[in-house]
Image (cartoon, rainbow, N blue to C red; front, side):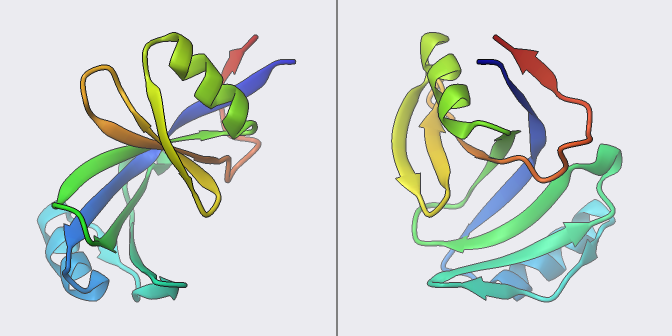
Length: 125
C-alpha cells in the first residue's frame, strides 16, 4: 500500500521555559506571530504563525536540553517510520500520537499525522 509524506515544519524545544515566554522571543526573532500557549496534558505548546510555504512552526516546553527538530507528516505514520528505518533511521519511541525518530546523523525528528490531506506531498510505495 502506498502512503504520502512531506516536511510539516519545525519545532523549537525549550527546556523548562514556559511556551508563552519562548514564543514571544522566537516570534520576534523570526518575524512571525505568536499564538497563545496551550496545554495538552503535561505538554505545553505555542504556534508561531506566518511561516513561509505554509510550514508549521511552534515552540514546546520540554524537560530535555533545548534543540530544534523537524516534523514529517504522513497519512500513514507507521509506513513512514518503516520507510525511514530502511534508510537508516531508528524509532526512539511512540509519544501520544507520533513517532519520535533518530536519523543516522543523530538528529531527532518526529513523524506526525498529516494535517492537510490536499497539500502536495511525496508518494511512496
